[in-house]
Length: 342
Image (cartoon, rainbow, N blue to C red; front, side):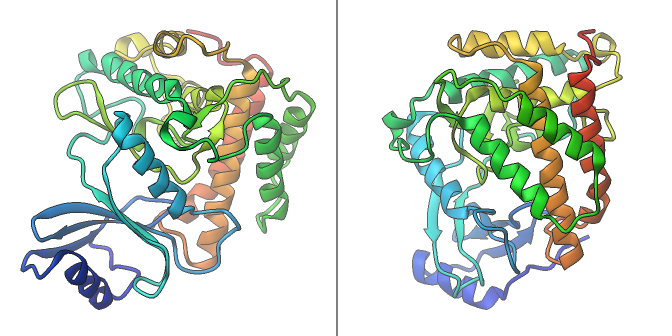
């Protein structure tokens, strides 16, 4: 099914012509499946690009930070981190109705399901290791060295993030979710002491948000930077570890699968590979994994709220609402010591 654009194409094409000159080859294609910022493939004048814009309609303060996405790409691309090359940023809404930016289109494989059913079993372990390598590479980059020293507030990351996402949950119009309330209480009572570790935190680093090389188990582009900030590296690592604590029907997790039979690594192997790429990383604790599940649950709540308002990007946004409760339950299971290492 071809999705219609959520903006008038005529001003956009006129903008491209003014910026790049006249061209006969113009094509705009909306990418299905995004739950956040609407995304399009753009072909113009021999350039293959990707357009990212904010959703139409009212937005939560600080959400859908298109400007931050562009800024981090502009900082990391010259530093050798695998991100798309940014092309331009347009801050005002007169063209598309919202701010937007263009970046290069990177060719490769997008593998959203953690079980990696699209590839032979013998290649799956290496792909997960490639995901760990790219995250370790990202966390080794010093923000101040790439012009991102002011990209967020260093220190007390989990305390501040917990306050942010708790507030978003409390202000949501969603139906009550007792499990999410219980998880929030536990996290609030078990916040770890700040250990001073600061890195660029992606905020949504997982299998579905990277592009792999066409034939190699190597990440060639990390995507979807709207939640990035200065933060704690274990926040991203804990977010990745959710795959081992959620089932295949819970946003593509691998809990309950025979990992060895499927050619998938254990959580322990993934974390060890990450620590090899970023030796300064501290130990990953149940708090970090449970916090990641809490945060993603609140994100699901936000998606469901936007679906009720009629301005969610994903066609199946309304189906995501039940995942908020299920992710909260998974977070409580980690606290209770379930899901031991297979």
